[in-house]
Length: 261
Image: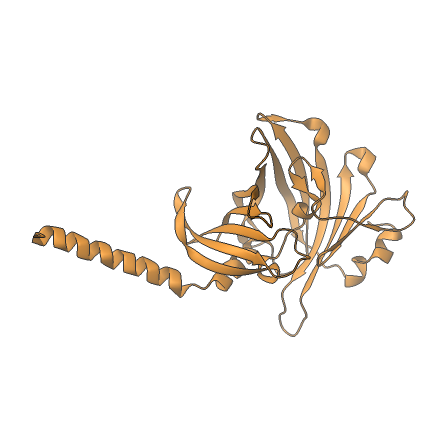
């Protein structure tokens, strides 16, 4: 026979479980990724510098360091304006790469260097530095690219996270599946695990060093670990983030052929 004290403990435990489940159910998957997207990138044109570093056994490989100056037009439909997803990445370090440009228009990506006659299409999966691919240095809008299912919550660091399964909406999206952890209280992105078509883990992305930038606490450091390289990892560090008003005409292949400033 269950004693009254034990019965009370069971009732209280069931109550808290029900409250927890209700709290999760009250927040939809779409709302979670939308709020996390807003933290990862503002809904206005902006510009930033990203320094890409590669480490092996904790030692930085200076010869693989890259610095890019990136302009973004990642905007969701608002006040009658259509959605937009374009970026312009200027290579500024090492000196041998200065003048090279990557242009992204939704899921299409082109590379241009002054030695080429015209921009050439390239793959978003192609490696740039270490575990960082071309597509990684450009912010991906999860709401547009993936359909999301909220599967529950789990501990993450010192907090609890919503756990979501993201499945790509189109074959044009680089990664077929992502397991995405978003902190429950703040909606800060915590970790994204990327999977292949045959459901094998490819890499994990950790969002770190949140700072107040452009009115939000945003991750200023991203650590990327490849599933096949346990001793090595890559880091993207963000700086000089600011709003910048650039016309759509600056995000075209014709524009980058004339010389990007």
